[in-house]
Image (cartoon, rainbow over all chains, first blue to last red):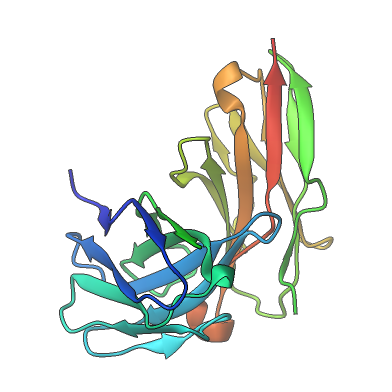
Amino acid sequence: NAGVTQTPKFRVLKTGQSMTLLCAQDMNHEYMYWYRQDPGMGLRLIHYSVGEGTTAKGEVPDGYNVSRLKKQNFLLGLESAAPSQTSVYFCASSYSFRTDYGYTFGSGTRLTVV
Amino acid sequence: AQKITQTQPGMFVQEKEAVTLDCTYDTSDPSYGLFWYKQPSSGEMIFLIYQGSYDQQNATEGRYSLNFQKARKSANLVISASQLGDSAMYFCAMRDSRDDYKLSFGAGTTVTVRA
């Protein structure tokens, strides 16, 4: 089925380790987003991309980097993981910037940093 | 500044009853969209309903309806005839022209349906 696929679904990291979360969409969407979800705080935007080769900072970008070398893929990197980065990470995509277009979400990645 | 406010962290509702989830928003943009998403315990984000700022009528989708009060900047979700499967976290979200048209979320409301 068409949609947004996130890998991995679960991961445990030790403090200081690095990892990359992959988001892939097959809907030809221009816009892609990475959010983190923490209890009581809803979803907060980390980074986003408005097209291939573009990235921009969101609300909580510190400690993360992203790349969008191909239109269908949006990678989120943690260079040196910290316990504060324990969270559920969601990738989302959208066809348009228009306010009547919502997002399609991936199923999430649960990351624990110990 | 917080754009979306959901003041109810958690709610209990009896099966077959209706429940209203509150959402207020802040924007100076005349054009915006309001969305509600459901997140069951399995974790995925499920789109429920959309309301545009220029829509004259309240949105409805099956058992979901949106009580849109533009002057009060509120967009409350009403779930009628609650079912056990409605137990989940519910997020209100808004997209306007500020911040590159990004979707901003409230903190969410957890709904527990009792048999």
